[in-house]
Length: 68
Image (cartoon, rainbow, N blue to C red; front, side, top):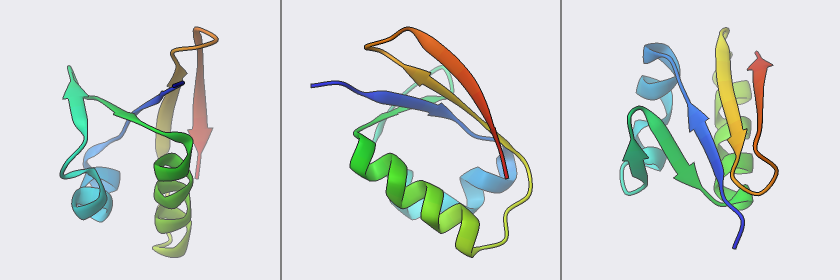
C-alpha cells in the first residue's frame, strides 16, 4: 500500500488532532493513506486554515508544499 506523509504546523495540528490521534508519527511526519489525507485536506479547508503543509510520497519520493 502506498502512503502519504504530512508534516503540519502547530495550527494545523490543533485543527486535525482528532484525525491524527491514531496515526503513526515519525519526527513530525504523519503517515496516512490517501483517503485520510483527503479528509485532512477537507478539514483544513473547512476550518479556514491558512498556512503550509508539507507532503511526501513514499512511492514516488516526491516532497511538495501545500499552501492553504
